[in-house]
Length: 127
Image (cartoon, rainbow, N blue to C red; front, side, top):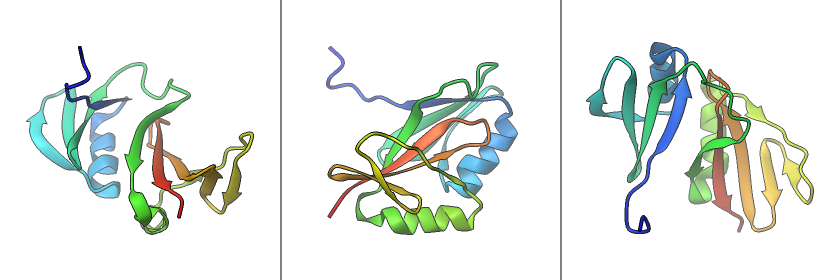
């Protein structure tokens, strides 16, 4: 029923103006033109990310958005660190770490949080 339909990531934030600074200034997303007092929508490749105001912002303890960055993972991590992003370190079974990048089987992953504590991940297939 939904297999041919587009989906979007939705991220709850407390302060929409602060979130705009992060999603636009730090992550480099561009608004789609759809914006209201309570939400703004961004393009991310061929996908969209809806950032909306919510009293429940930051309560999710799991990954909210995953970004497929292919072979650019190290460069993206460096670029975000230069903009002040701090990466998370997780001790997970069967996962090793090289600096900010976790190695899980054939996948490289780096996690970071937005100002509300929403978890984002950068994913690349390992060479």
